[in-house]
Amino acid sequence: MADTSNTINIKNKKASFEYAFIDNYTAGIQLTGTEIKSIREGKANINDAFCVFNNYELHVRNMHISHYFNGTYNNVEEKRDRKLLLNKHELNKLQGKLKDQGLTIIPLRLYINEKGYAKLEIALAKGKKNYDKREDIKKRDTEREISRRMK
Image 1 (cartoon, one colour):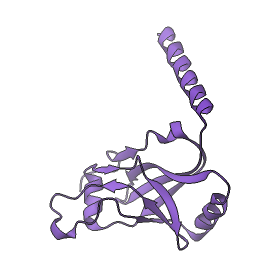
Image 2 (cartoon, one colour):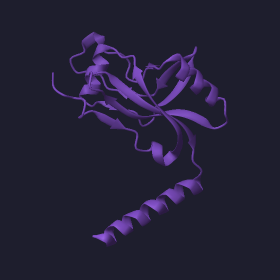
Image 3 (cartoon, rainbow, N blue to C red):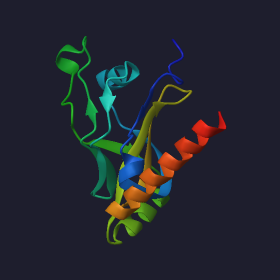
Image 4 (spheres, rainbow, N blue to C red):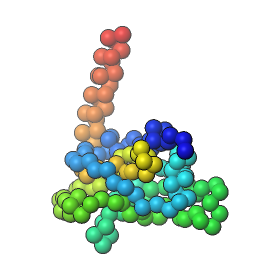
């Protein structure tokens, strides 16, 4: 088996611009065989994904995993809800914090660990206001300008 642990690293690039992160967690994902094969090919997208609680279980919604080419009838719906695997203590902590106004759970990164399992890095986040976003843009521009002048 080829070493895919370092090659598959699908990020949600909009997340750090749109949200301020409070807590980070790493969760396993309950997938079918064709879904993990598609992820190993890098055919997944988490930009529009978010997490919701359903019967005390955490599910990721709107995560797009393309159909596996050789999957035939084993392929499942591309944007179905997928169960996230966290322990009960972490689930209770997240569910308690979600009751606060304006908090949400968003995926940050989808990767394959050393053992070959797909993992999803999620964060408890609060949406940024427009002035916070403008400050981030200013900060990034000044850092870029300083690094240019240092060269």
